Image: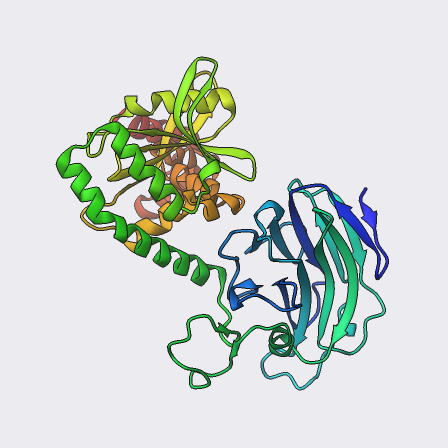
Amino acid sequence: MGTELQQGANAPIADKSVMIGVGWDADIPWDIDVSAFLMGASGKVRSDQDFVFYNQTETPCGSLCLESDHESDQRAFRALLARVPEDVSKIVFTITIGANSGADDCPHCGMIEQLYIRVTNLSGEDLIRFNVTNVGQERALMLGDLYRHQGSWKFRAVGQGYNGGLDALATALGVTIQKTPVDIDDHREDVVTLSRRRNPKQIWTEKAVALQQSLRRFLPQIQAAVDGQINESNTRMIIDKMLMDVFGYAMEEIKAEQMVQGRKADYVLSVIDQDLIVGESKRAGVSLRDKHVFQATSYGAYSGIRWALLTNLSTWRIYHIAMQDIVTASLVFSVDLLPDVSLEDCERLLLISRDGMTRKGMLEKRWNEVSALTRASMVRAILTEDVINKVRLVIKRDTGCSFGNNEIQQTLEDILLHP
């Protein structure tokens, strides 16, 4: 049970990685947005990139990310406090309300029922909670903030209203808002657009485009490495650079030459102090074989890691590691970077980026889709009673012949299992 705060009170935060969840009665007819602002000593954002909201879901440093979906709260932010830049003194969390398109009413935050903000650990256990009550008729509300205090962090329950909607609040906190395309100089790249709300698919596609652009900057170097047949050590130097510059991992999150129970892995990729991907790298351009992933999968099985990366710089393969009677590695996807990489392939590679690995279940969902369409999975589906019964009815309809389900099942087994 966490600490419950009253308005104006504060509590310390010991964890370095936390979730900030915001929730309310979901059965309300208005548009509600939750945002966060990283504030400098001046009381304003240092730049427009310090504004995290539906159209800009993560800070460049990765310290704060608005999750696309969350199981327990209406909205949730992942905060990696150790990554927050030193010149950020606090992070303010806000909620704003607006009428749906075509609505005639003028809603305010006082109409939001059962409103709360809470701080949890990454497992979802409450650390701090503030149930927001006595809200006025403003359209924006500062819910609470994380702030530095004597070398550590605290959370303060604020609950302070602000006149105006999200654009007015953001402007007051130092964000440059673009209302129409002609309002600003076309060369300004740091302005924020509030008008176009992007859905999770659009955001994912935009991230894949950015990853594609980053990868294409490496393609000449990759092609030269393959043509020159550079050695494994030099290949790994390029892979290290790609893991940081393309896939977004910090240097300390790329662990090299890891050992467990006598088994060695070339790489272990870690996010938020959790080892997530074990990697095996080979000399640039060398033909990849299933035996090459054996070391990585063995390491993963003994250390509890479920994903393995095998790459020769130009080809990147991801495997799912399972351990029942024996350790098995099943291919999730394979991407060839040369001569060019498609946007579809970049959407796959985004799953193993740092951003993708922090989004719960994304890679798992891809694996489920792959495994659902395997021959074994399809055979199991066809041999279920409801499918067999449907086949029997179709045969009777088309031929007039009546058979029992056992006869249909036996015939299907002969076709599928003994071709």
